[in-house]
Amino acid sequence: MAIDHEDCLFCQIVKGDVPANIVFEDEHVCAFMDISPVSPRHVLVIPKIHAAYLEELNPETGAHMFRTGHKLAKAMRRSSLRCEGVNLFLADGEAMPGRLRNADAIHLATALRLGVDQLVA
Image 1 (cartoon, helix red, strand yellow):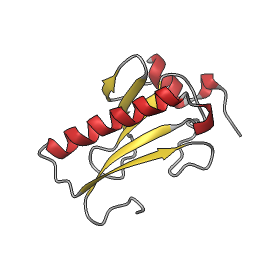
Image 2 (image 1 turned 135 degrees about the vertical axis):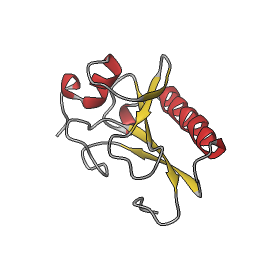
Image 3 (image 1 turned 180 degrees about the horizontal axis):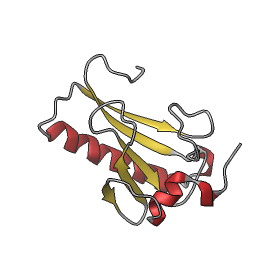
Image 4 (image 1 turned 45 degrees about the vertical axis):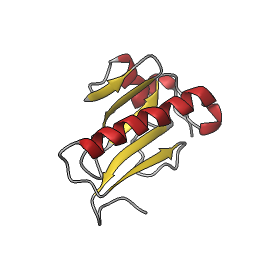
């Protein structure tokens, strides 16, 4: 069951109503640290316009989300953090993994891989 946009946690973060550790923001996307990370530097990239499902997302915005995820992954690899890989994972809808209550909106997870970790291959 889809939630109202006003109740969407991600929309509230974009509006500044809910605090977040924002690492990147422009006119199309917002990227912030996940509050329940599966690895160090687990960042979520969200569109600034609510979309619960991939089919609702403007293709240009989706491409921009991946470009942003790519930049973040590149920065993570170049950092001093241990990194054995980087995952980009697009999640949408009610059945998304690790779903937060009131956050059934599309997002791109960008996470460092550290050998055996909590991420599913």
